[in-house]
Image 1: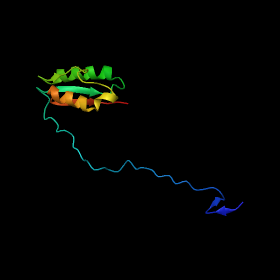
Image 2: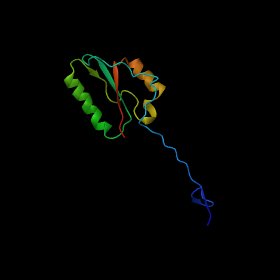
Image 3: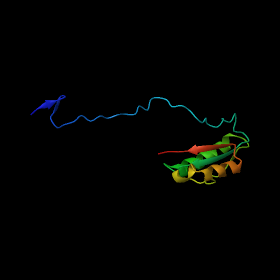
Image 4: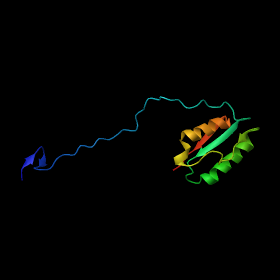
Length: 109
Protein backbone atom coordinates (compact mmCIF):
# COMPACT_ATOMS: atom_id res chain seq x y z
CA UNK A 1 0.00 0.00 0.00
CA UNK A 2 1.44 3.38 -0.95
CA UNK A 3 1.01 6.48 1.20
CA UNK A 4 0.57 9.98 -0.27
CA UNK A 5 0.08 13.09 1.88
CA UNK A 6 -0.40 10.90 4.95
CA UNK A 7 -3.34 8.99 3.41
CA UNK A 8 -3.45 5.61 1.71
CA UNK A 9 -3.28 5.95 -2.09
CA UNK A 10 -6.70 6.73 -3.61
CA UNK A 11 -8.16 8.38 -0.48
CA UNK A 12 -8.66 12.13 -0.31
CA UNK A 13 -8.99 14.52 2.58
CA UNK A 14 -12.43 16.15 2.83
CA UNK A 15 -12.51 19.81 3.72
CA UNK A 16 -15.37 20.92 5.96
CA UNK A 17 -16.09 24.59 6.69
CA UNK A 18 -18.15 25.69 9.66
CA UNK A 19 -20.06 28.91 10.21
CA UNK A 20 -19.29 30.55 13.56
CA UNK A 21 -22.63 31.91 14.89
CA UNK A 22 -20.95 33.77 17.75
CA UNK A 23 -19.93 36.67 15.53
CA UNK A 24 -22.02 39.73 14.85
CA UNK A 25 -23.71 40.96 11.72
CA UNK A 26 -24.37 44.48 10.61
CA UNK A 27 -27.82 45.74 11.62
CA UNK A 28 -29.47 47.22 8.54
CA UNK A 29 -32.94 47.79 10.00
CA UNK A 30 -33.53 48.74 13.62
CA UNK A 31 -36.45 47.45 15.64
CA UNK A 32 -39.40 49.76 16.10
CA UNK A 33 -39.05 52.24 18.97
CA UNK A 34 -40.19 50.82 22.31
CA UNK A 35 -43.20 52.30 24.11
CA UNK A 36 -42.45 54.30 27.25
CA UNK A 37 -45.58 52.89 28.95
CA UNK A 38 -48.48 50.54 28.16
CA UNK A 39 -51.24 52.44 29.93
CA UNK A 40 -53.85 53.61 27.42
CA UNK A 41 -52.19 51.82 24.49
CA UNK A 42 -53.69 49.51 21.89
CA UNK A 43 -51.81 46.22 21.60
CA UNK A 44 -52.11 43.33 19.13
CA UNK A 45 -50.60 39.86 18.76
CA UNK A 46 -49.13 37.89 15.91
CA UNK A 47 -48.11 34.31 16.59
CA UNK A 48 -46.67 31.33 14.80
CA UNK A 49 -49.17 29.24 16.82
CA UNK A 50 -46.48 26.97 18.21
CA UNK A 51 -46.11 25.37 21.62
CA UNK A 52 -49.19 26.20 23.71
CA UNK A 53 -49.85 29.61 22.13
CA UNK A 54 -53.60 28.90 22.40
CA UNK A 55 -53.17 28.85 26.21
CA UNK A 56 -50.39 31.34 26.76
CA UNK A 57 -51.58 34.28 24.64
CA UNK A 58 -55.10 34.60 26.11
CA UNK A 59 -53.51 34.46 29.58
CA UNK A 60 -51.01 37.16 28.60
CA UNK A 61 -53.91 39.27 27.28
CA UNK A 62 -55.73 38.95 30.64
CA UNK A 63 -52.59 39.82 32.59
CA UNK A 64 -51.90 42.93 30.50
CA UNK A 65 -55.48 44.11 30.92
CA UNK A 66 -55.30 43.56 34.68
CA UNK A 67 -51.93 45.31 35.10
CA UNK A 68 -52.20 48.36 32.83
CA UNK A 69 -55.13 50.77 33.20
CA UNK A 70 -56.83 51.73 29.97
CA UNK A 71 -54.90 49.27 27.82
CA UNK A 72 -56.77 47.77 24.87
CA UNK A 73 -55.47 44.33 23.97
CA UNK A 74 -56.99 43.04 20.76
CA UNK A 75 -58.21 39.44 20.58
CA UNK A 76 -55.41 37.00 19.82
CA UNK A 77 -56.98 36.06 16.47
CA UNK A 78 -57.33 39.64 15.19
CA UNK A 79 -54.45 39.15 12.74
CA UNK A 80 -53.49 36.12 10.63
CA UNK A 81 -51.57 33.53 12.64
CA UNK A 82 -49.06 30.82 11.71
CA UNK A 83 -45.58 30.72 10.21
CA UNK A 84 -46.86 31.02 6.65
CA UNK A 85 -48.81 34.22 7.36
CA UNK A 86 -47.24 36.35 10.08
CA UNK A 87 -44.34 37.60 7.96
CA UNK A 88 -46.35 38.59 4.89
CA UNK A 89 -46.87 42.07 3.53
CA UNK A 90 -50.62 41.51 3.83
CA UNK A 91 -50.36 40.89 7.58
CA UNK A 92 -48.12 43.93 7.97
CA UNK A 93 -50.70 46.06 6.14
CA UNK A 94 -53.50 44.77 8.41
CA UNK A 95 -51.45 45.57 11.50
CA UNK A 96 -50.69 49.08 10.26
CA UNK A 97 -54.31 49.71 9.28
CA UNK A 98 -55.54 48.58 12.72
CA UNK A 99 -53.89 51.52 14.46
CA UNK A 100 -52.21 49.47 17.19
CA UNK A 101 -49.47 51.13 19.20
CA UNK A 102 -47.53 47.88 19.49
CA UNK A 103 -47.52 44.23 18.43
CA UNK A 104 -46.40 41.34 20.59
CA UNK A 105 -44.75 38.79 18.32
CA UNK A 106 -45.22 35.40 19.95
CA UNK A 107 -42.95 32.73 18.49
CA UNK A 108 -42.03 29.39 19.93
CA UNK A 109 -40.67 26.14 18.65
